[in-house]
Image (cartoon, rainbow, N blue to C red):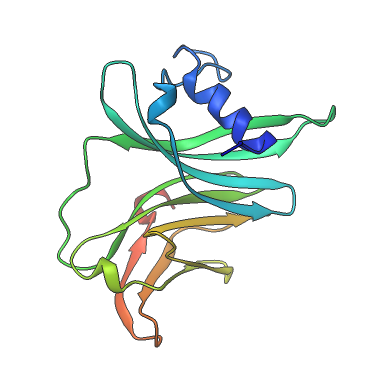
Length: 174
């Protein structure tokens, strides 16, 4: 299957050599890259990807792509990790996020006991901003095109709207 231009930019970033510069890559083995989810945004896309690096370590990463003035795609890693997920006794989002005065972007895997029942995840920020995303393939991706006030209340809901879990996130960063 052919990659879109944005996916090709993500692939180029992933297979690049790791280094200290923002334009450095992740050292991914090309054949291991899986695009788990993409969410369209007015000014770009959010991508959740999984891959193995050249040392054979599994990695998950959330990235944002935006158009550059020349029409190409710029890749902005948001964050991620490897080594599995922490155990949780209820549904929980294993978040990675990035924010500033101009935007909030983030996402992660919906994990924990009961995560397979998750249908929707809602974030309600301290300033009243509320965003939602469906738990497609047990991955959620969020983007707010303006700054937000932390913390955020997270609600994980099932298909009929029953709250499976609710908790505060980013409280230590507010």
